[in-house]
Image (cartoon, rainbow, N blue to C red; front, side):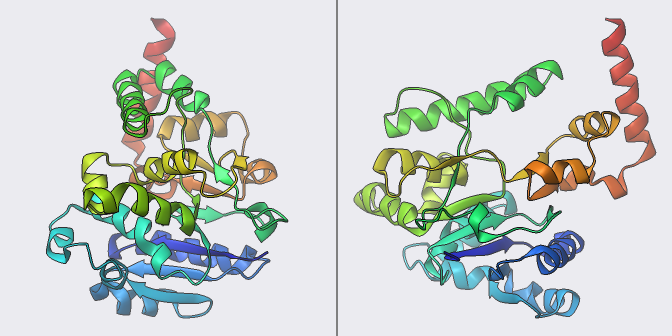
Length: 290
């Protein structure tokens, strides 16, 4: 039943957060799930020095990309980081010794004991993160993030059109997400190979690895669909974090429903600048008087 790995794609700019993640896995991983880190080859020595080797298997991004001979390595190297990292995450299944992997970002951290049974059913089927994302939608609309909401809705519509699916607009995030190798194989066999493209081309066309996986699963039914809400509480915006803290929702409360927490790296709480807090309170006051 432990047919699942933990996988994190990172780089030197996220090393402090990666240390926190690795330490949380060491503390709370009650099923001894294998942990893999992938970083650029030039960063491996730094990461090994800072994180050590205990409970970690190391891969380079270059190894993962090279496992797919159809990807032009020079093209991969030319991509910006926010695109190239999606490709590495999506291609890890080729080297993963397990059938499934929980794909984790560096700014994630486990906050309580966790077991493989929270990820894999008794029949060995991985749970799939899929929901309609209504909380996210409401947050965007109430915090005047209409452009963000519109862009996300556009991406959802584009993927439904590509796969020819009607019905609800689903959200397949936020990270961490649980992925199965057979879904990626079916996507490659049914979409990529016939069109002579790779996941690199696909993400350049529609840049969301989570949606490529989720819509492919719905289309080809590679595995039974066992839906789950997000595994981690993800604070994508500073306002979400402040709202929860004012309500008294600390990590001890979050741990009842979530395995961990995501503090978006661009405003990680320990490094919040006072001016940002002041700006947020000022915006809140303006909203109250309008």
